Image 1 (spheres, helix red, strand yellow):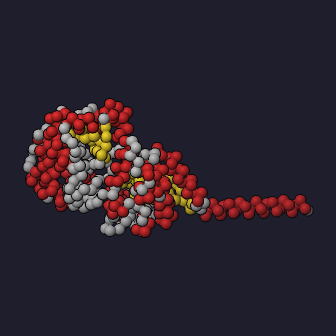
Image 2 (image 1 turned 30 degrees about the vertical axis):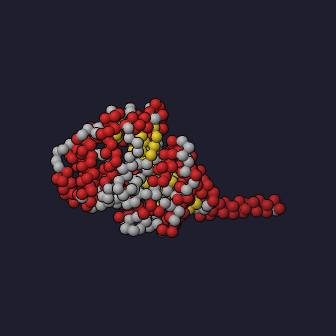
Image 3 (image 1 turned 90 degrees about the vertical axis):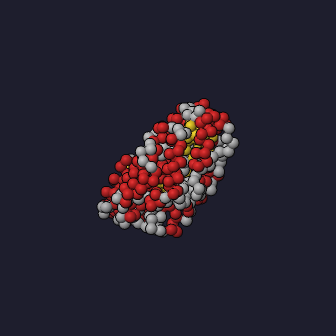
Length: 405
């Protein structure tokens, strides 16, 4: 009898513990997080996730890494369902499109007090915030000190206008081009125009816009920029820099490693400075952010995890593994971004400081790619002298009237 009672107690205890375990398992909430092309940093992501789950034992983070090429398509399909991911990594352009469609949850401003205010300002849609910035990049100017010294020019140019004004002297004294502007690649021309006060599409047919197009047309006609300017990409421009054929190259700090590995002699003569500006003095940048779908089941928990992933320490840890720039103000004030002991550190410091002067930015539209293509076609028309600047810009505005949503 005693043996039977002991067995009975053990059985009851086992059932009770199992039931408790099942209840605990069922009470655990799951947050689904999508990122874009972060597979190379899986150790970092899993470490952040494990730490967060340890601090929040009732939560489980399901991380899914999506290829860049599939990000927009998969996201658009997902946010229209009743069970989308809770947190999605996107670019601001596509985020604005989703906000326009009313598919995103609004982010309270008090949640982003620790982020760079200039970046937050660029992410607003109809004066409301629908995304949290994760990381940024801001191009710097890489230049050949030896060629610049041979040009006989003392002061480094700071604006496109100053650069254009010394292009002839550089070519005469060095045989190299001042730069190779990739003005028909993606949104390059739009970013340049933005620096000259073109912040709305209606400004594309303005005097400021005409002067910018005219500046590049003059450089092209006088053969002060390479003929390949109308077709080349930034990677091809980099090859020209590594070959010693151009003095200034504007791009990300990550290209310094490519120069060091592929053209060590050029790297020895390389230095960095701020990106070229316009009269408004602002810098361009690229940002990656997080959004929360309106139909997400775990919106509160998703925002809390997002703010943890993007806090100062986690952003700094990611920045130290990559060439990205933090968007968290506390991270940006860290000594990591104030070190200029070597060229890479100097480039990083310059990029970080540029984030304090990025406004005004041109608002992106849903069909921005079509707009960019129309602008780039106009660039080719003007540089190849197929039509006047006035007619070309008039035609551009007519095209965009049928393109703008």
